[in-house]
Image (cartoon, rainbow, N blue to C red):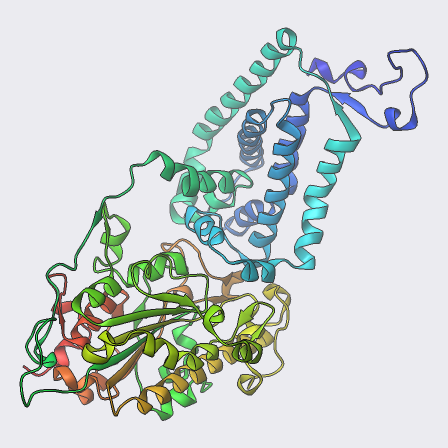
Amino acid sequence: MSELHASALSPQLATASGTAPSPRQTARWSIAPRWAALALAVWCTTALNQAWWGKLTALASEQSLGLLEEALVALVLTGVTYLWFMLLSWPRLRQVGWSLTLVTAAAVQYFMLHYSVVMDASMIRNTLQTNYTEGLALLTSGLVWHVLLYAGVPVAVLWKGISLRPTAWRKDLWRSGLLVLASLGVVIGGGLLLYKPMAPLVRNHTEIRYLINPMATIVSFSNATLKPLFKRPRPFQRISEAVALGSTYGGGSALAAAAPGTARKPPLLVLIVGETTRSDHFGLNGYPRNTTPEMEARRVISWRQVQSCGTNTLASVPCMFSHLGKSDFEGRKFEYENLMDVLQAAGLGTDWLDNQAGCKEVCNRIPHAQADQVASPEAVHRWCKDDECLDQLMVELLDQRLRSTQPQGAARGTVLVLHQMGSHGPAYYRRSSAPSKHYQPECTTHVTSDCSRERLVNVYDNSMVETDLFVARTIDWLQQQQDHYETGLIYLSDHGESLGENGLYLHGLPYVIAPDTQKHVPWVLWPGTLLARTGVDERCVREHIDQPLTHDNFYHTVLGLLDVHSPTYQAQLDALQNCRRS
């Protein structure tokens, strides 16, 4: 610490010519980069780790740390962060790299404090795939002020308040090396000393490791972006070679023509991928508020005990369309075709219409479109605002999308997928039209933690009412197609949402620690005329609405409902199989 004497930090009182310094020169202090990096690391530990320290305080009743242990934790956090800043400590990189780190850390802390998010690799991947309109919804005045306070101040000092001395390699290299080695010693030694008191907390509350700011974000970002670059891409395997249409198509193969006297209407199935829908806020599932009156009037069947594959869209949607199931999908060594590929290979017309941030590669090999890009200007004007559209826009496009699947779809059958914007937060008030705003007053800000519990629940429930209206209008459209098709509909949400319970908001927590509100989702079946096609007893299905199901059942239930034969089909995972007559 000998370098912190007056000469190291003294103002630059003379210029090379010996003239008096200007006021701007006297305001800047000369400091070695290694000490600036240490000061920034201390700032991160004290000012930008509020979520971490708050969590430790909240867990004090479970595992209380003494003052010396807390001091050691602070030293370890500072040491780890210092190593990162020193890694960026190259003359042309340091100020930019340090500034970006501080701005990112301040922004991440804001979301940790206001939405209780944790920055694991899944959250990073989900963030990177968020479209810009969803991103803008998160850009609030509160976020801006938080970043200006916690990052703007040290960044201003870094660029305008101090002068980083040029590095003299012979003199400075060994001094910087000693500080780096000392930091490594603190991190390793402190980690060993803290293992006993901290291990139980980390084991029982794995989320706390993702609250270490900014290192959790840096590590998770590396895992999500850089790590795949050093991995061999998974080989791609087809699973659709042996698929065939069943006997209900009049011959049992995708190429067979219907036998005389056995011709029947082709199937038309709409699959709605819901977004951010909680099962316990579904009126059909016993919620005190009737948020689903339109679906109830159309006699849909709603399974009540359904668990999602993930807690965000990126994790759930590819998983629910996979034949593998959650555990095998997450540990897979190959990339496979999915449900839509199998249906298309069987000879059915397929189409994916999206009102969200893409299909997460599920629709890559089938026809697909973004709703606002194929809608008429009049429809866009009616249903869209600020580059976001209500889901009812997709209802107006159903005729267009159905025509696009012909002639194959008209001859053998069609499967249309509608991917909702649904109840995606935090701008819930933008997810419902005026007729659906049944519950007042609403939360009309993006900062959900600033709203009362009543307002937040009201605005979320209004988005449920909007989804109910959207599904009902789709069912009405299907009923109009029954002269030419045997129709049916399945609605299944990708994940749920936290609405302030235990201080949690939004979704995306790691699955093992996520609350049930982020995993318990609704699954609705409108039987139409399609259910009887494969001998399913509707009354039996209604009697088993409390059977436990997961996203694992979706792939096999759709194949069974459409009478598509595949070696990947597992009858025991077909939610309708036990009610199907021999």
